[in-house]
Image (cartoon, rainbow, N blue to C red):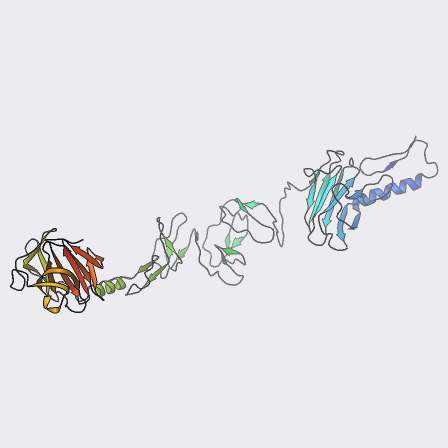
Length: 445
């Protein structure tokens, strides 16, 4: 009866009556296979990447030792292979548990599979990683490679460095080469102490901490260093206990207290405007849409705008009388001049009940506080009249154009206007606020 071989290790089982006088040789080979399978270590140097159809085979030979028998296999190369390496365990029916280390250069991965390649049944070994893989020997079209420790449960792990290359904590993705950046609902520390306050397994620590030392990373984008506190602007800082400037802060609500200094980069309510600064600026020159102003600056600005025009006295005007400044602080009604919102009427100006002159062209100083009958178009001059001068202009059967002269600001209903039209048989008034600014009213357009 001829010899047969075990499925997984290829150990030769000598047939009855076979190999007379050579049993010792065959048995010794079998012991070598067992020895290699239990504790064999081998470094395999790959010459090329291989491919899914023509991979680098890892054979388990029947009746002789081979690379695939080893318990620990390390893959290396003589230089960067230029791509991902493909390794296949043979035969496809052999069951195997093996420790593999990827020591390829160039940050190259290794794809391990068994039987015919199928991406759903292979396993990728990252560069620099150690893995323990199970080849299930499922046959040419079904063999699958899996991580033995995919769902590892341990009682305790003590490690100097923990490198987490993927996944998520509280829904925040963590990357391969940098610390996770995110907001975590729960960070569970199951033991030890902070500043002498013991922290338990099931509940967070309760206590006041003199110092919390965080040696790296960032909070809200502000980098924190190893030996000093972070310096930066933080969108949200959640402090569940302790005090700030002597004001106790609670677990579920914002602190209530008086703070010596609060520095902010922006302040925002429920609306769209964000405040970024508080200015002490008496002239409001920056005209900022995002800055608040001090009380003193508001007062100084208002005082400056109303300087020289503070009303401390009023006369006794009657309904519809036009009011004028009679001195620096007093406003008085003009009995002979009324305006009812539509019509400007005059019974007397400077003692005259009729227009004093027929005028066309640019007015002169003689027209101050007088009635002018416009026989043609009129130009109002700058730097001819003084503050509080009034000119009444009337028309006969024709409308007239009233134009401002060079250097004069002429306002109608609060709008600086270059010219207006005084309708026929109408009257208008011109009040000079300063020598270079006047305001017009009456039946004009």
